[in-house]
Length: 153
Image (tube, rainbow, N blue to C red; front, side):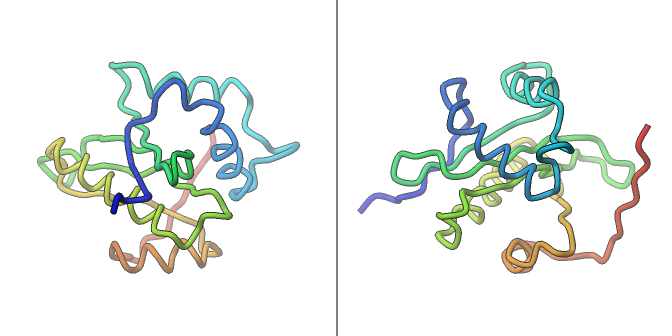
C-alpha cells in the first residue's frame, strides 16, 4: 500500500495549487481583503523559493496527487548556538483535509531538512487562538513559554 501523503520540494508548476493555500494561510492570520499582503510580497515570496542565494525554502504535501499543504522555512545563525537553527515560518493545510496527518508530515519534513543542513533546532510561533494547530504542536515540539514582541519599521 502506498502512502497517500507525499512531501516534496515545491516546483514552479505548483503555483496554481500553492496560491489558494498561501491566501488561506494569510487569511487565517487576518491578512485578507483590505489587510491582505501586497501582491509584490506574494510574488517575491514565490520567487525566493527558487533563488539559490535565498535562505527561504518551501515544501508541499500532496494528498492523492493534489497539493494539500505547504510549509516555508529558513535557516539562520543564532547567538546561543554554534550551529544554525531553522525557523518554520508558515504552515498550512487545506481545511477539508485537516486531521489526516498532513501538517505533521510537513513538520517532520522540516525537521529532516534542518537535520540534513546541520541545524541544531527547529522553532516556530503561532497565535494563542490557533487551538487546532497548538494541539498538534504540543505533540511534536515543546512550548517554552516565550512571548513574541514586534515593532514595524
